[in-house]
Amino acid sequence: MRLFSVDREDDAAQVRQLLALNSECVTLHWSKKITNVPLSVLNALGTVENFVEEKVGSYCTAGSEIIELNDDEETSLFKMIRTHMGLKRTIGTGVILRGKEVDEVKSIIAGAPELVKINNFLNSNKNYVLF
Image (tube, rainbow, N blue to C red; front, side, top):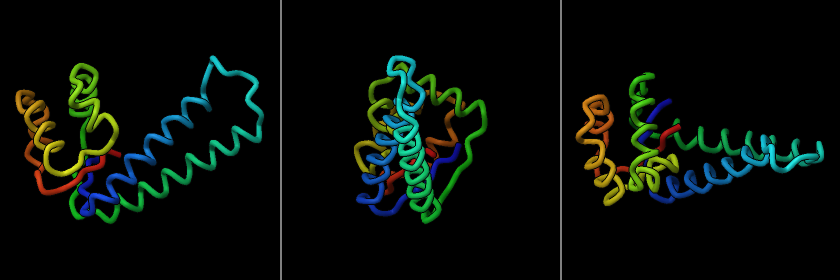
């Protein structure tokens, strides 16, 4: 998993919406509660998922800075996301918007030594995508 900087806030907001759409598609695609989904619907979900991956990837490759998270960093981050509402609202969506959201994430993860690389990478003047 990588953390990308995205210059334009509009682009980051679009990524947040695309990731939310993708999450819903994946949920329906693999649902055990909703069965007998027609093949045409499953194919359409796959098309949407591919579109989202391509579109988000284009925003992320346009970013000027990237850090790669190792397995320990990913595990620690996901544990913290499950236990902190501030992280669920921000990085839990896959996007951190500049300003207050970045500052909130930095303050929450500041006490986790295994996340120091992420904390040092984050800058209040940028938007970020976890992808």
